[in-house]
Length: 271
Image 1 (cartoon, rainbow, N blue to C red):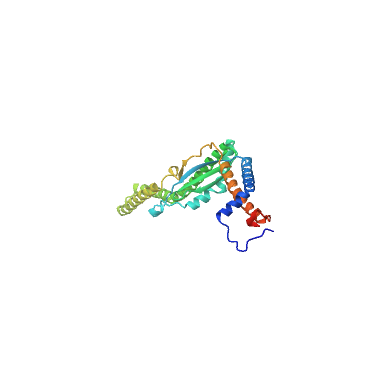
Image 2 (image 1 turned 60 degrees about the vertical axis):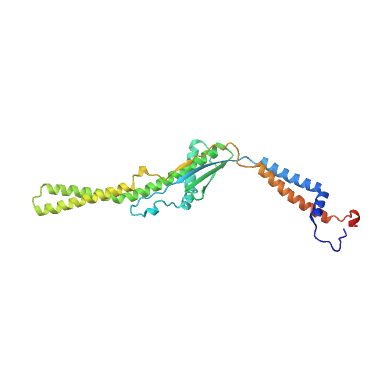
């Protein structure tokens, strides 16, 4: 075995470089092999295209008694769950099938410090990626609008029901007043008639504050998905650089290991 000096200290930089220079062919072969394998693997991968559509989510407020501070609040974590739900995916899939497009894989993410959701679709077909991102954005907005409209209709129903009841009562009082000859009774009915008119006017005003279902705004597409012109993966430059770095680290390790295991004597100093 190689004779080791009795008082050998840690290697300095020149000794490290000397070892690497002596084993340079090992280092070159390992780096070249690793980088080549990484590039070969990268070029054999199927190119994938990505396209994104961004949607802004707008708050909806129906209850006039609701605090104004809550009117502009949207629970984006809940909306993200809806955006990633199977319901949205299935609705978008049906839309794509009708268009003759194979659905791509898609995921929804939140934009930090913003009330927006980004739908990103990935496929080997750039047109499928674009269509899938847009279809999922439209499906999400459609589902959210339907949900909000149902909530709005539920909020409007008590007002509409009461307004109809008041209308019926007003007709009955008007019919009673036509042939009434009792002044005291007439005074009471007239007072009731006026009170019902005031109540109906107030309810009509509150109903107007709720808004009409056809005017519901739950969000819109800020940025529609564009047709990708180049694949998002594989990234040949990144894969090659990663293979080069891994090969360099591996090559240095192999070089030092080979030097450690080499028990041949070289030169007067080692002897």
